[in-house]
Image (tube, rainbow, N blue to C red; front, side, top):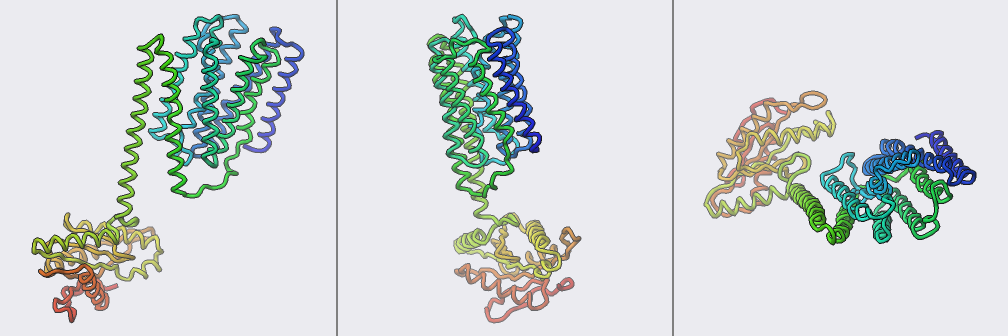
Length: 503
């Protein structure tokens, strides 16, 4: 939003307030004064809805959800104001309970902002947030049953019975305080929005106190107390007009902060269920079945959220486990994991009196690929190579990234001849296929050093050294070949000659 548009909206807001002040002074509670007062408040409310949507559109992440909820809240308020204005003009007595309910609980959609994770950058609500929103709607239903239906015996159905005013003010103030506490715990967009809205809701609660227990209870529409209702509309208008998310500092990828934010979100998701429980306990005194139905619905929402949280926790644990054992680039076993597999297979081979073959695989002239095509192409080669080797390997063989452009293959049940045969199939399969990169196909070959345990107790370090020695000879005698370690351990013996042009 440009500076000129902001100034224009502020000027319109101030003009509306000035007109309202003049109407209160000149006309007071006369029919014309009451109509002007209602009309100005309706105009301010109608301005808020599109302005909140525009603010949501130019916001990102959770800020977008905050302003969408604000637009929804004031849409409810506008409906109540339209119905109330029509009632004042035509003297109709319809929808009184709905009008009273919307005037008292229009802010609840804003309160649903407590359910949202401020660290989330997603433009869509996750399932947990949707369940929380359903819980918020259930709170609205329960509030209607408790505050409106139980006030049905009063003369003014749009007002609360005297015995229900204090519980309503307690609920209102608790939500306002929850906003302020949440703002204190969070940062960035959440702190700005929740902090300002928390102060606003606290001020709104103070106006309600004046309405019930102060001078407002004797005032009629059009008198000076109506100016306070207009101010309650002007405050969020000014917050939306001056909102500028782009000026906020960029957030760092702090996992500890994100974990804290998610924990706080879990805690504040209990605010509305706790309020539902308190209201249902009061409703049960006269309508036990209705109260039980509300509690069952709230329990179902809470249970659904718990199950979703548990599912997310299990997924996170699985992701952490995979991250700890798999290479981030190629998605195969990482260095520590493949060495652990080698140790386990050697123990099993010693027990079963079998052999374990290993291969040390290196990409030929990999530095030249990086220099000629770029490191992104080099990463593409490594990913493609891991995939192609996986195609040839048996289902019970293990492939891991040993480091850089080197791979390690553990082949259970294979002596040296079987490991050489498997290695040659891998080498020829890779040599036959070029890797497709952004700059076109890249021919890739590999050199492989082979060894195997030979009936006695073997340490992993010994086999790795043998395979590395064989690999060194394969690289030194022309590349694109398979070499096996000589069983005497003194010389190297070529097992496979070059089958394609060397690189």
